[in-house]
Length: 92
Ligand SMILES: [Zn+2]
Picture 1 (cartoon, rainbow, N blue to C red):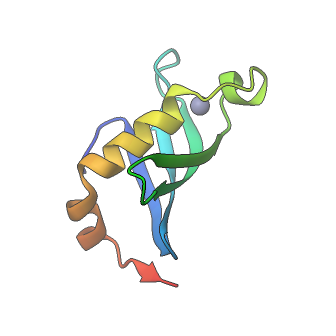
Picture 2 (picture 1 turned 180 degrees about the horizontal axis):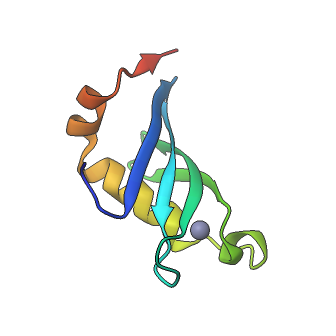
């Protein structure tokens, strides 16, 4: 386990993107986990593109880029090598 706040369910390499599915712990409701899916691409320009969805209220009702999407992305990037070796990553 690389983070107490994030459970990774699926990690795939799709072309130049990483497609990550998992759950992120709610910071306001202990015991609640949010379902998160993100697609991450590092552009040749050095910029990073993140496309994501979450089932939390901030995202669903507030249409905000919520903390869960950003947090899962950052935990993935920080622990990428460890996570990839732990998952059988399929490359399409
Ligand atoms: Zn969220």
